[in-house]
Length: 365
Length: 152
Image (tube, rainbow over all chains, first blue to last red):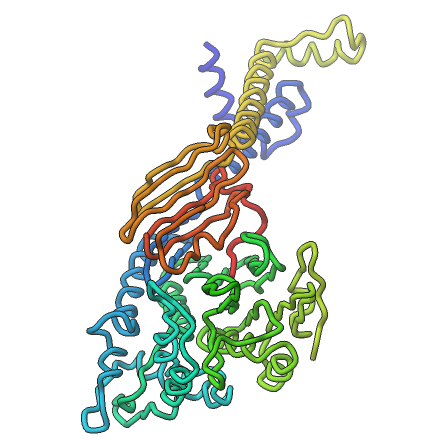
């Protein structure tokens, strides 16, 4: 009985909506109430049903831990294309793989240059340009030095001074020779490690790839190298604290509908200790030893991940004073973390960076 | 039905309290509305209850496979969780307050440098062993804080 009335009343809803006059009766008013409640319920139901698909995947790749988060209709497809792309790029840039283009390049010589893919050649070219800009503070031919110190191996340790000096002469980006037709070779005494730039570069390409699908929000985390984009809202990126594990220095809100990469360099994660001294993994290309810097970390915020990756390393190695000058000269937006709790932040980032407890922001320009 | 409506309407004006009578239609509608309200409130309450009750839990994965997934509150008695990875072994201390990698046979020890994992979203990754230790919020990530991702 009740259900019969129910359907009858439902059918009547439109006519009551159109003509408000007969609704003066209690029943009419109740119908209006019902109609209202109904529409509210329906709209809330509909919006909850229409929630865009979100997909997250984590994997061990690029010699690190990668997490991709994509929201949007084609999230699933975008993610699977994205992971395939990562392994493709890994196959090109990894020094650990014998068949990678970088390994082939490291085995090349003047008489036998190798032909590289478009991506590898472009990355190499960019990296050489950036090395020149940083006056060699950033150098992709750092590989022999990293090997000497044993970073990435089972037994890292401090080498003899003579060994360091001997190896230092091998580190020089000018030993990379780029030829026409995507061909290149390196001098036989050196080798290339693109670890300082490849993740930023892959982040850029990956973002482009994933955005070509019907998606609305993309968050890429390539081992702490972050790249974000959201069509209609901000994305909040935290900058890790070098002192407190899983603590934050500050947060940065990316503008909507803009691809932004946030890349941090520091020696607080990758280091080893010998005789009570801590040795970080970022090398000073002048001394051949881990850099001595008054910075705990350097974060670069830019639309170009390759640059961000290179420059964050460079800024960290330069130390706060030189880093600020360099950042101003090159127009880099950055956050430099000092041991005394000061965060030097580019004045162009005013209002976008919010310090966490215990850290104070000072702007520079 | 409609006629009684009209009557109750006029009588309400004259004697608002004593003579007010609901028609069967009114009762029906009111019932439906009340039912809806109860449903809505109950639903919201249940959701709140779930998000409040589901305490953070610890998840340990090795090469993508979940080895352990349990609420932190289960570990009022701290335990040392041992796993053997590709290169060797790891020791993970789990208590209801914190989780940390206390020992690892990996060369770089980055996982150990991560220190204590306390809040949802905290994690330690051991690349050589392909092990991820993380604290996950019980309520499908809603209360993981205001940060979407961390640059490090």
